[in-house]
Length: 210
Image 1 (cartoon, rainbow, N blue to C red):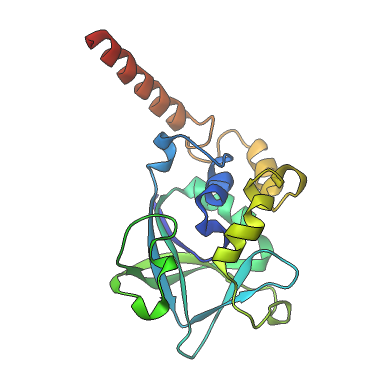
Image 2: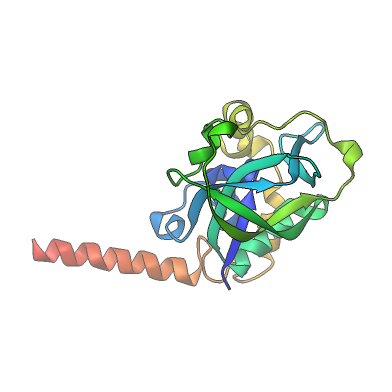
């Protein structure tokens, strides 16, 4: 089953998303091409900093608040299984409707433009992780993705990542306890192996034709 999810925090960064669902910050194109990432906006929610944490949270908001993030399509049941473990008890996965922001596809796209310049396109139903661990743990201040990328992401997937586990170990341990929970799309999964083998066969065929 294919899933569509809206991410508004650390998972907007492809290396973090890839690390969670595939166990690798830089998976081969045969894997990354299975996902489509577009900028999108979620209305009637507010994004907050979580106290003493690098990641944010969202809560429903009656006012005119909105949250910009990434809409990711092509996620499998196995990917969602990993994401549920990664998000843990602090979040609950819920269905929402988001509007795709017109502009280039990619990790940032419309995220870098000013809010008043948003051009909304089609509406899409997606799953999103909503904070359920208590409003008292949240700050009023808005969480900033740009600041995370510049100042914090190296702790998650950079040179410092080995010394500071940011929730990946729990996912890794759960994966290790099962044979192939990713439905074949993990680093050593059957689908990945088949795609890589097919790619190698095509290369060999091209060499023979030259």
